Amino acid sequence: MSPVLQVEQLSKRLEDEIPVTLVDNISLEIAAGEFVCIMGPSGSGKSSLLYLLGLLDIPSAGRIWLDGEDTSHFGEDQLAKRRLEKLGFVFQFHFLLAEFTVVDNVALPMQRLGRHPQPAIRQRALSLLEQLGVADHAHKYPHQISGGQRQRVAIARALINDPLVILADEPTGNLDTASGERVQQILADLTHEMGKTVVAVTHDPAFAHRADRQIMLVDGRIQSG
Image (cartoon, rainbow, N blue to C red; front, top):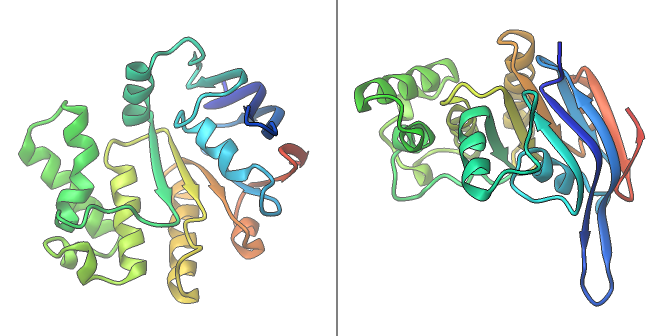
């Protein structure tokens, strides 16, 4: 079986007055249904690598395959379509839209994909909120719920289009211990119970211990994993 994500000699450089290499010649394969944590010191390139894997940034060199498809020749419209179809994102700060209710926030990516009628989209959103234990907050606004609840809503939003891969950047970094542990468990369950591929950046060794594999980055290069 082909890996769901594969990168070959991937690099990202910022060509400023003093050039900076964020990701340095990385080759990597991530299997379908694998839970991978990316770790490393601050400034090691963890988030930069995650943004490249998520097609949110363009590499300076190298190639990225998503679900067997070489994305190196894609234009912005094609990249945006693949992100909607095949990738879900969870960030340290939930980025829920303040003017939308919880259920409307979750529904947005499915609406943008434009493949289902509104009643089906709403039902899917409510079902995910139920699975994640926040259905009773569906009609509230983000400021009316706790940080941990907002992050579970963000996970529901990431799942709405049934993506192949969930990419999470420090998803527990802004939460209290109890909320963080619950989010960690949810992400682990996405892999071990639902078969999703999860790639998460974290500083937390306890979170990384839940993963099938830990990748250690130092100065933009893989040191282990």
